[in-house]
Length: 75
Image (cartoon, rainbow, N blue to C red; front, side, top):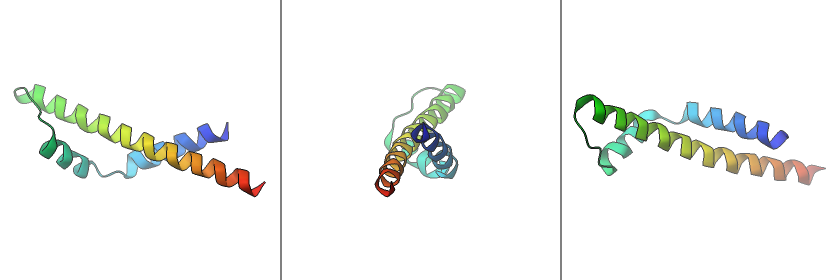
């Protein structure tokens, strides 16, 4: 149960602290966004959101598992 709580805490911390402009630059330079005007901007923002969620999930999972292992070693 504690691992789930740690995961959500780390997830929200990393999603808030992950700079959006860095992810936006990566999407702009390395992914092809097709469409006109509003459709292209929606695809761009959706791509940025998905990448931020994936990166935050990976970091949160790694931190939660490390925290769980460290707490088990202390007991």
